[in-house]
Image (cartoon, rainbow, N blue to C red):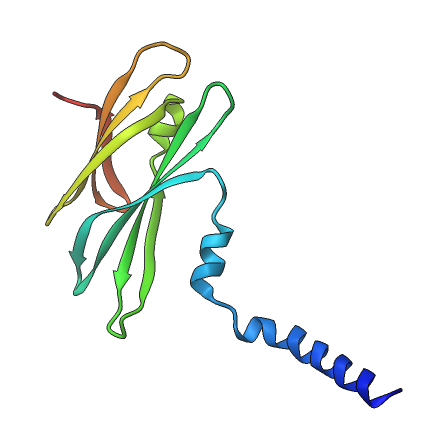
Length: 148
């Protein structure tokens, strides 16, 4: 084996092994998001049990001619070292069961939780509806037609 071949083979081997060492977890995580996730927003902030953070809202869509949406809410915690972690993630299954598409939404947060106001269209033409979602914890929320 020539010295040139050995150097090239060694260089290629080092490059192959160095890939994971230089991985970027943020870029890797974003690249791993499914294509169905079409909207991500910060919906407000939260504070509980000495922890603080932000609510992150995801909208994922699927379907061809009749697009329907799924809505997820995450509690993203701020850590003392400046990093963040995901505390909880929930799906609002009641919205998924409606088989509607989310056209737009707004949110407000306060000491009690987060409220999300959802503008939806029915892809089957049955009528458009607005919804309200009031979340007080990952296990407690109210979802229903908008009251105004």
